[in-house]
Structures are given as C-alpha cells and as structure tokens.
Amino acid sequence: MAKTTSSFTCTACGAAHKKWGGKCDACGAWNTIQEEAPLSTGPASKTLGAAKGRVIPLTTLATAEAPPPRTRSGMDELDRVLGGGLVPASAILVGGDPGIGKSTLLLQGAASFARNGLKCLYISGEEAAAQVRMRAQRLGLADAPVQLGAETNLRDILTTLDAERPDLAIIDSIQTMWADMVDSAPGSVAQVRAASHELVTFAKTRGCAIILVGHVTKEGQIAGPRVVEHMVDTVLYFEGERGHQFRILRAVKNRFGPADEIGVFEMTGGGLSEVTNPSALFLSERGQAAPGSAVFAGIEGTRPVLTEIQALVAPSSLASPRRTVVGLDSGRVSTILAVLESRCGIPFAGLDVFLNVAGGMKVQEPAADLALAAALLSAREDVALPPDMVIFGEISLSGALRPVGQAENRLKEAEKLGFSQAIAPERTKAEGGGGMALRKLPDLVTFVGEMFGAG
Image (cartoon, rainbow, N blue to C red; front, side, top):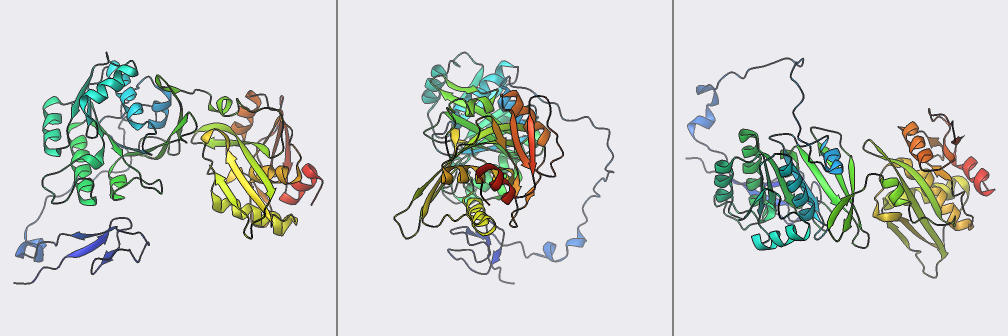
C-alpha cells in the first residue's frame, strides 16, 4: 500500500510547501503554513474515469433573469454600501478594529431589517444574551422583533437556523465559532475556514442571508485565511479613529454592487447615526484659511467626498527627519516629496513632515496627489491657500499632472458646498461654469509657480 504524505499550504497566498515552516517563502507571511489532509489513494482516485459523474447543464451568457430582489433596511448608508439593500442567500463579512462599533452597527441593522419584515436572528459568540439586551436597551431597540441567541457550537447554530429558517442571520463573531468535526482550537485557521464554509453553504442552500463578523490583525486585515474573503459575496470594513466620532463603512468586495462604496456614520451616545452629507461634516470645523491646509475633492465609490488635508513642516533636530502620516499612504507621500525635490527643486531635507486627513477619513486614490503637494508647499512656504479652492489631480514621476475620473461630480459637489475655485490637470474633460472657476495646469512646476511664486 502506498504511503500517504501530508502537504503544507500557506493560507495567505496558497503556496505549497514540502514541510512546515514559520514563514512562507513565497509571500513572506508568518505563521500561515498549515498542514493539509492528504487526498485518498484508493482505486477510485487512481481511475477517476471509471465512475462517471453527471453532465453539467451549460447555458449562454445571454440571460433574461431579473436582478436579485433586495430588501432595504431603512438605514440609507448601510443600504448604499450593500449596493441598494440586502440580497437573499448572500454571505457578508464585516471586519473592523476592536471596539470600533461593529456589534452596534449590526444590531441596529438587524433591528431595521426586522422592522421591515425580515425574520432576523442575532447569534453572539462573544457576549452573553443579557449583555446584548443591555446594548439594545441603550440603543432604544428593545422592542425590535430580533431573535437573540448566545452560542459558539457550530452544529447547534446550524440546527437552530435550519429549524427557524430566518431571512437574515448575524454571527458575531466567526473567530469564536467551534466546529466539532475539526480537531483544533476555536479561532484557528482550520476552525475559521470550516465554520465559514458551513455557514456560507447554508446561506446558499437555504436562501438565508448570513452576516459574519471578523476580527482584524494589527495590520488591519481580517484575521484568518484569505479564502474566507473569497467564499463570501461581500466584504465590508468598518473604519474609524478612536479619537473621532466618525465611522466609515467601506465595501472592498461586492458581487451585487459597486466596490469601494462608503457609508458614513457618527458615533453618539444613542448609537450610530447616519451622515447624509459627509463632505459638509468633514469640513464643518474648518476655520479661517491657514498655511498647510488644502481641500481635496475626492470620489469614494460613486459618492463625491470633500476632505481637508492638513500638513505641518518644521525644522528637525534629528539626523533622520520624521515623516508622520495619518489617513494617507506613506509610500505615496514619500513619492510626492521626491518629485517636489527632483522636479521643482524644493527640498524637504532637514524638515519634519506631519500629514493628516481631517475627521479620521482615509484617502487612497491617486487623485489626492496634487492636494497633498499643495498642503506640503503651503506649510513649507507659510502661505495659506484660498479658502474657497478645491484641488485634485494625479502627479506622475516626471512632474506632469494627469487627469482623473469623475471630475464633473467632484466640481458639482464642491460648488454645492460653496467653493468657487478649482485646480485640476490640463486634460481634465470637465469645464467650469456657474459659480465655479476651473484652472487647468499642465505640470507641477507650473502649479508651484502660479500658487507660490517659485519653480
């Protein structure tokens, strides 16, 4: 009889290894290599063609099927991120830092869906039922028709879901679920993968929508194998800074709607309240014009959002000046600093640089390059930009300004909030008009010369 050999696979990238190791050689991740059970070596596996399977029915790409029905919760920001509402039999994964408000958001969402006619179950594996009821009373949701349970045994949970047949089940959290058919501790890679597979399979076969809550690592990624994110239909991240009351619900994957869509909430004593105009909220505390402040007209999903980028440049007494960045990509900031020095002759050596996006917002799109450069130059030269000006545009390594998408929507949002000037790349398709004066510039050198009299 042939000897079966075990295989070892990295749960982060899927690379195969001959033996276990602490670090994956392919992707560099630590503690992600797990032993896989060997495949059967019996006669059936050697002669697969001996036992024929059924013929799979095939169809064409053309279809007359209607789009999936959706149920709206009544929370417009949540419905926006889901793509217009909850789709039956969908699997959703929600991640976020501890204490950011994931349980509060989902409890409010469950109450809203239940009041709109859905049968909702909330299964807590981290808190006792009494604790969840206390939170519901504090949020004013004690009268919501949501059924509550506290359990971690996956077999018992699936049996309960099969008996109750809910329209929506919330599992808080997937790391606390324990499957007795897997010989490992709760929260391990094998347990998370097995529990997720069983719950997603139940959702697809029974027509029940499932929302899974996932813990995040210190790098901000959802803990556990990345295959869980591939299993589900939608992956949402609940973001925010502890010092700010604003919370951002961001869709990074959505099979039923646009990805990168965001919903904005404000954490209050009575729970999360929706923010219908995030641009006005992020700019509400903006005072008089000050050096180092630039307003960026960005796009998050399908929504234009205006945010304030703040910069502070000060002489440094350190051999290596500090570069502190909050809400922006630090690699992108280093690139802009290098372009300013090499293409415009403006050095930042010997200067500490501090950058922040007001309100706890995270800006990731390259369209923020020009506003970032404007904030840095404004802080360095101690010259305030006009308070009624918005800026957007991508900066190439040659110093040229590249146009960005949805410029018309950016300008309309800025004009709606009272801004009357805008600076954009030269090949921007949108045109100014009405109360908006648009200036199109070809490169960063021209921008520096016109705005700060240098270059």
